[in-house]
Every structure is written in C-alpha cells, then in structure tokens.
Length: 119
Image (tube, rainbow, N blue to C red):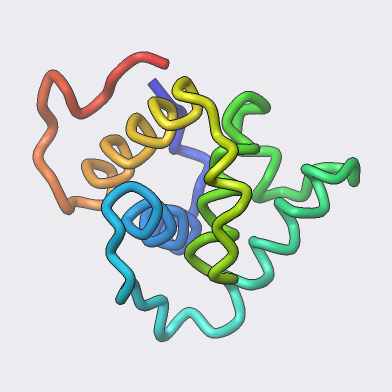
C-alpha cells in the first residue's frame, strides 16, 4: 500500500493525470484550472532526481517510486517520453499500483481487492 494521506487532492490529481497519460496513452489529459502547479511539481521532482534535497511534495513519494513518477510527469507535462521509455518492469508495476490507489482515493473507482496491490 502507498500512503497517500500526506498528499493534497491537487497533488494526487496531477500525478493521476500523468499516470493516465503514461499507462493508458490518453493524450488529452488536461490539467486546466491547476495553473502552473503541474510544472512546479515537475521541477521539484526533477531537482530531487538530480540530487537536490526533496521538496515537501517529493518527500511524500517513497524513494523507490520517485524515478517512475518523475518519468511519468515528464511524459505528461513536458511531452518528453525518453525517461519513461527507460523504466524497468518493476517500475511499471509501481506506477500501476499508484494509479489504482489514486483512483480509489480520489473517488474515481471503487475499492477492490486488486485496487491496492502491494509493491
């Protein structure tokens, strides 16, 4: 289980939007109404991946999940797909787990036995 309690609903919606793009190839994911917040979060996670101290947002993401989330954010927000193309199979499984849990947490899906895979 991923601990989503510390995330704001806005942060969860942004990550979910990125995962929709990455996992389900939905290209028309819109983050309208969020202003520059997606870009700000992308810059924060990018800085952390490149050695800067983790921001408040990034510190909520377990270390092992940061690279896959970062890659998904680059693909969805900046339309740069090379990082996600380099992800390992285990990284993709973690992204699927995030997607399932975020959908339930945000009320987009009902909880099921498969909605919260252990990673």
